[in-house]
Length: 270
Image (cartoon, rainbow, N blue to C red; front, side, top):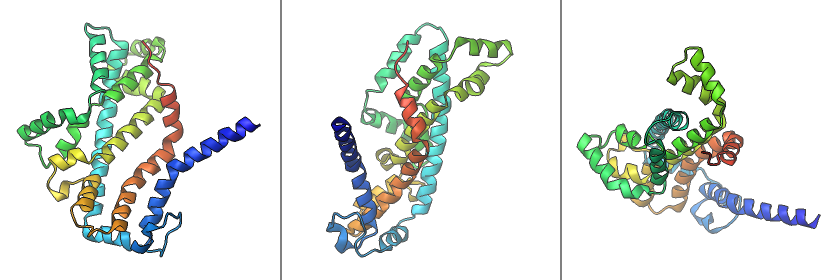
């Protein structure tokens, strides 16, 4: 009994330590500048002025639509490309297959900053600077999605694929009509991780996008916070950060069960 009490006490403390900063941030965004020093969970001098100021000073609605477009399209491309490559690595025998797989694993250990300059030079050479292509194409193939799809496809019985081939199904139909519907937790995991990564990406857009009409929400919020438009108003900066975080929180709340299930069952298999 005492062990259970201790376990649940530690879990509650851990959960509180994670959720408290976000609740405080939400509360601070609804407080006046005078109330920001209070570490309370309820707004001090409740006001909507911080959010009104954000929408007044920057085109956040346009940036939101840009982020949705870029994140949705990139996530779709990652799912398609990851499923195709993962299927090839899981179910096809060809020379160099294992080498390609290990190179993909190795690329996951490289921080994005290492390839930042080569990628930027490529965007300049292709004339994609200040276009949506610069925000989408470099992220259209994701190593983690390939790994997760490969592991998921390997867990499915070979008889499923053989039956589809006997019915005259082509490779693309096997992937997207037969296999993908059977690994939906993996699809949802990749969707959430990719969408979160693209939605929160600020460094790359800051480098390749200069036209405000094409800027994403994280980029615009970053420039707003450090570029002077917020006029050193901390509450306004916090309000902008809350608006940036809310879509991700909502997405995770809807799909957290599938996300946790897939991550728990995505062990490495040969």
